[in-house]
Image 1 (cartoon, rainbow, N blue to C red):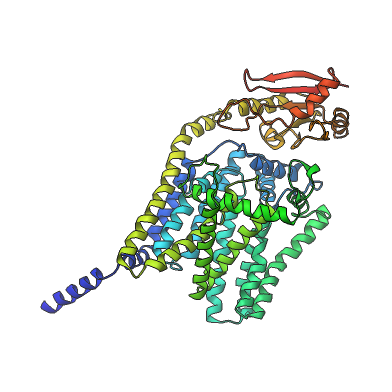
Image 2: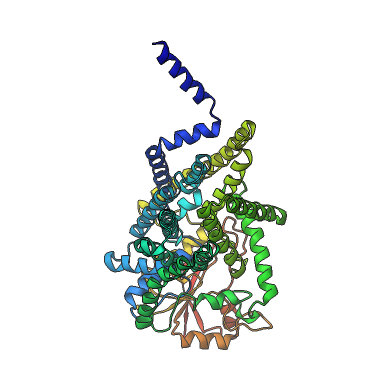
Length: 560
């Protein structure tokens, strides 16, 4: 009995001698299923708490929906070229199988978000310390913007799912190469990695960096055959895809449409021409400030979402920390994190160079946040792991960030529940501000009340398409036929342009510049087109419908 007591006492004292980090490591290693279950439940909970049954005012989700519908109804005369086509092709497949069912499309994205959490967990479990892994998983499962996109027909949920599979497949191949470095022995794993490399690059154009980064990774490792295999595994899917696209749609590709827009100084004013080298350098600096001093901290709930301030010094600090973190994992020979760090860094670099700063959308940096957080937390972890006080400081700081992430999601979810309840009950316009309600109701009126062969010009044509029950609208994104003196349309040229495109009506909304405030300032693109026409030809535009009592939307018929 005495011997048994001594043994238990020794085990207990050894357990008590463990540091805080070591205790968390032991607990995490013994609770794989509980952790996974918890994160999946959290993901589903916030997906439905933040569920959005409407279309975003940002317009891109409606653009993808319209593209999917056009694939089905205009095949083979339509190919989506605004950006990468994979998600739009998937929406086209759903439309073909089930019809145009918005709620169903959204539920598919909830599933993508759910499995993104699952495969991200499977990829990184026991690959990084649990005091790093758990807060990153909490972000992936609960972040308010990730959960917002879980029920919206943007590409983010779909991409995060594919990216998690890309990480997962890389780890599988990496493990196999550690056992047998002869890459030709692992053809199935190469094919799996090649497939997901192809899919992420076809889902988001910026993810094309995965191909050169994979090659670079194996070249650094002096694994020449594997560098060739990484390229070959991608091309084995890419080449047949391009041949099929060329056979069905001709010379179209995912870069043909967007590249022209990205070269412009102003995507809404072609007359300003293309950017030069200095312009692209300026984009990079502006985007670094926007995304790394503003959006990065907003996504963590550490900055007000309505804040417009940027801080160059803060962006510089974030960049410096990420570079130091990447250098550290390189020194530690943590090859998978080196690869993921290079991949994420390349995505950010390409995005910051090619995108005009005016886009300023948090989703640009959102897809890179999980790896960025792993690198930052890992650097912090390595700096304090030998200090008891340092471990405590780590837990407090990272814990506060986790609480901030959770509070941001709870706050938005609580505000969202009454809105989604009314939307699902049939009030599809509830939750929009009056300017948008009038605009979308007017789009529905056009579908119900105008002749089927009519074509209505709209500032937000894809949104008009969705709420107009599949009626085609003519997009107007900038002032057409702009006069250099007045900065408005030349009336005769504008009328000729509309006639050549068979436009019969023009819808004029009062969409706010600041969505949260009715300040009287509106998006006046269409106003600057029709005002010169009305001044020169008072009878050429006939008002036939007004929607709303304030912040109205008007429909004008172009008379002959």
